[in-house]
Image 1 (spheres, rainbow, N blue to C red):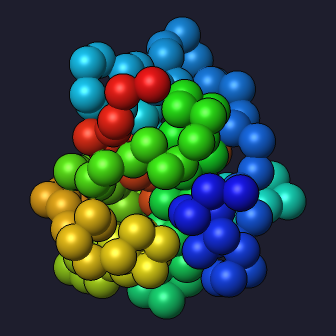
Image 2 (cartoon, rainbow, N blue to C red; image 1 turned 180 degrees about the vertical axis):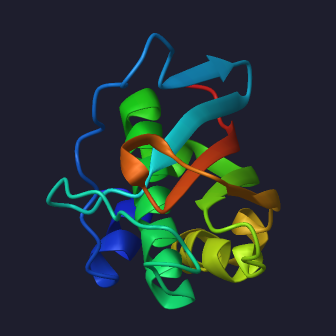
Length: 156
């Protein structure tokens, strides 16, 4: 078991198998030392989508939990791409879309659910990243959150 998988086990986190993409695109792409992961919507370990619109039917706390599940989905994709999560050298970027009403203003608080989770898993140095968190009028499957990621990885 890798050290990252041991850390996930300590946190009682199960990394699910990566789902099939919902469209005609690559779920991930490795280019040299970089792993790009397509947007992951907020799906729990049972396959249920965290649905709702922030500022209307969902709270900031529910949104942050949904963002955490996006981050778990990102790690599922990374594991499918790399085979071993210990190949991740650094999280470089998260790009997040939050399904929200027009006057919602707490997008960063929602996306902190993913950022904080990555710091728990990788530590502050490896998980220090840049990001964006923007509002969206809708997301696939009425998901609360969708997040993409870029990692620097070690060669095989």
